[in-house]
Image (cartoon, rainbow, N blue to C red; front, side, top):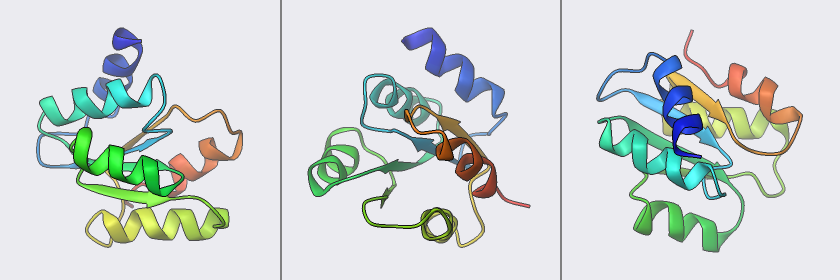
Length: 112
């Protein structure tokens, strides 16, 4: 789990102080990715669902932002991540959610 998420974060080429969106942030791989990203000096936008996961992401994992996907369309999710990441989008994203649509969202939420 650790090597998988570490390698994915390195592949984003995000630098300290830049944003990375982690889809599936509170799952088995995602929670490790959030901790690695924070240790690497990245700002983390956790993407998952539910108030309990929001609390976990922000208060336990130390993520900088949280986007709750519950009840949102793909477009709304992407817009919410862009807004959370300085209104422009993430510098990188890693997909750890078991949802096919997460892959397109992960690309769409990146900065131009």
